[in-house]
Length: 99
Image (cartoon, rainbow, N blue to C red):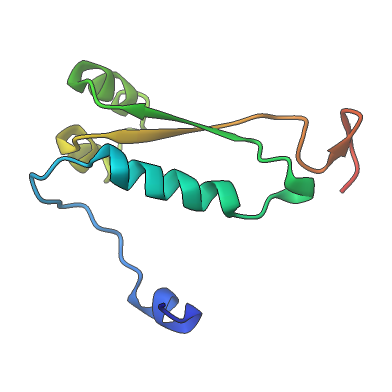
C-alpha cells in the first residue's frame, strides 16, 4: 500500500487516458472505497451519478467554467462521475449548523 507521503508527492492531474472503457467492476471498487471513507457524524452527504452517454457527458461538460482544463478529457471519457452533495446535513444537528 502506498504511504501518504508517496501519494502526495506522486499525485498528478491526468488529462489523457487510454481508450479502454471504465468497467462496472472498477467503478464498484471506487464507490466501495468512498462508502468506507469518513464523513462528519457518518452523514455521507454525497451521491454519485455515473454518466456514460456521450450526449449527457457533453451536457455535463457544458456546465464547466469556460477555462476548465478538464473539459477536453471529460469529453473523451468513457464515463464521468458526477458528485452531488446533500446540504444541511454535515456539521448540522436538527438542520442547524453545529460546527
